Length: 222
Length: 222
DNA sequence: GTAAGAAGTTATCGAATGATTACAAGTGCA
DNA sequence: TGCACTTGTAATCATTCGATAACTTCTTAC
Image (cartoon, rainbow over all chains, first blue to last red; front, side, top):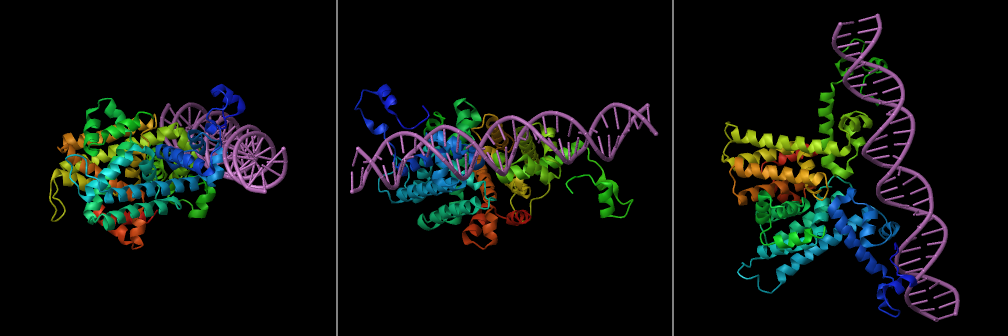
């Protein structure tokens, strides 16, 4: 069954008639768009911009390849939209962590920097999100993606400086640890952790304190 | 003139007869190999594994595309050799910095960690070297490149722990700042620095203290 | 109910790219 | 000098991939 549409014949296979037809219904293009963007985030994060194919995105999203291209125009436009969405999510997560009035996890300090740091680590649950951004950071030489990637990084830095109130050095240290986390995820270092590699264990436990469970969980389904 | 060999006709165009024929001579394959590996390091660093083409490598090296492929077998084998070479250079640079008995630059402290840190920053002069490694770190999901990339990272970590004597936390901080530097280079953040962007200036001056001149120089010819 | 539009697909094209083959030209040694 | 070996290229092939076109099917407003 290559089609996303459940035909009448399929319906009889699935269930008795007159049963939850919403799976047989077409999606609104807006919903399908979100679905494809999610799939694209995962694929771009895993293989990078050039390594990702529109066909792989389509397969993950469960649609045909031409549909992906037609909806976004070009692969490049799709990637740019993925980046924009990822950055928006990142910034929203940071902003929420700053203004969140709930108490910090038991026994942990509660400074703005620490709240933001925990928020960043929370984004690891969506593996593709941070990795897609990181992949764009490696394409600074690209005439189209490069400027967007730089602007995105600057946007995060500016937030840390002006909204969180970090000094340049504090922001540098924060971002450096973020890049380190991204690298650990990009390397699939959790694979070696699962194998019991002592170096990998040291690395991950130091680089991702308290967030290892999240990373290990998200590495399983891959 | 697409050929690397200066033909008789070219020679007459270039110079009077009987003039420095060594530019017209063939290279030993070993030398040509080094030339291609250098070109490949630059191209892979700039575009990543999938974005790089054997043809681009060939053009930079000044040879034909089939020659590149035949000499290394496959693009993948070429990339793996680039990674191995880059890591060897990295480790050799670290080892030399550790055992080097020359005094540190005027007014700077001289601890093993600081020496290694300066050595890492020195590697920025070859922009492709660190970027090729970084590109591999983003391909941890690749069945062939992934394990090699993880092993390479572990090798650096082990060196820091066992040879330099760093604690896990010290190694983590060191590597985090290394990833930050790599990111700044990958983003071509120096372009914004040259434009006078105040954020870029802050970022680079904090992330690459004292090494900005190197980065700005190496960004010009690109 | 039916016509218009939205949602999606199949088929296919052209360009790019890694790889292969066959061939040409320089180099060195007897 | 000539002959084997090395160094290198031009031509070309098979795939892959992004993109386009044309068509089908569902939905919905009247």
